[in-house]
Image 1 (spheres, helix red, strand yellow):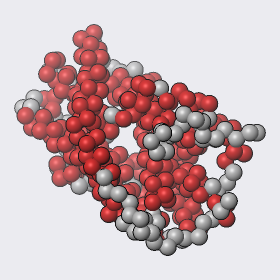
Image 2 (cartoon, one colour; image 1 turned 60 degrees about the vertical axis):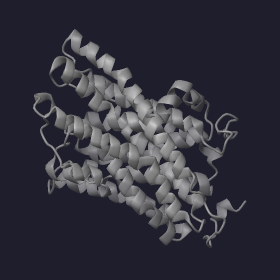
Image 3 (cartoon, rainbow, N blue to C red; image 1 turned 90 degrees about the vertical axis):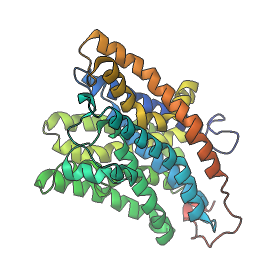
Image 4 (cartoon, rainbow, N blue to C red; image 1 turned 135 degrees about the vertical axis):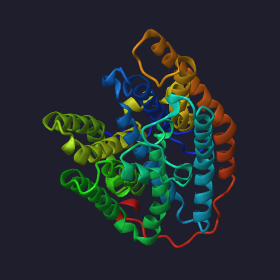
Length: 384
């Protein structure tokens, strides 16, 4: 079979950006919006609940891009300060502003019943990216408007630990270590969901138990950048794997109504299926073209801010207009929800333009030095 390779439009002319990945991110953001606005809601259309799958893909994208960056730049003498500064400028400002806005609005309307939730975590837990620990120990999600932020906590924890794998372990052991982390995560979930020693939330939101989801994208980056295998021989397999593994997850869900097996094995299967999908996209598979769609790329560009604030927009709209929490039981509730959708996109666009974009640009002004440190020998397959 002939290699698919990277198509002529797969790379940004300004420096190697794979623009189809922006579209993939935009598609996932669309899935999250549909899921949270129309499925995971009282009287919602539950068959539209694709948000969980989208979150898995967000993790894969993040792991791939961070892994690729580390592999490409770890030889620079100033890697750590530049890496940290760029990540802080890219993620912290929009996140911190979003959390403070959410808590500020909740405080302003604290006397209203629609701002009260079953469980609430302290503000400092969100500001220190430890809210996922509170989720695990309490079994709740905290202030629902800020609930999606637990995934950002996991990613920030990954950003702290991942460079140590690449710097402290010899190059030839990278893949083995990450595969071991993925398998350990499955084993931990098996213990959690079969023994009852701790609550099930521990297996869903804590870093060790979600290790497979977090490192699958990094593994894809290593395979892609280090050329450990001839991917051209597996193009068809990369395209088919996501569908096959998603069907496998569906079968697991059908044969085990308790969802125990699903919670143990589905994150692993989906993570590596989505990692294969990502590799197919970056290699320019025919279906990658659809993700270069301008609207999807626009949504991908603003997805971070939309993701952080979209539940607040929905809750605030229903609260101010209908004096209740969001649901879809009447025509008016549908109209309010439909109106909230473009407003969430608008707010995300404004925050991206005013906060994320300029500070990300400042972070990128921190340049990689010309001085290099001694690199590990390249793997055998990467020496060509």
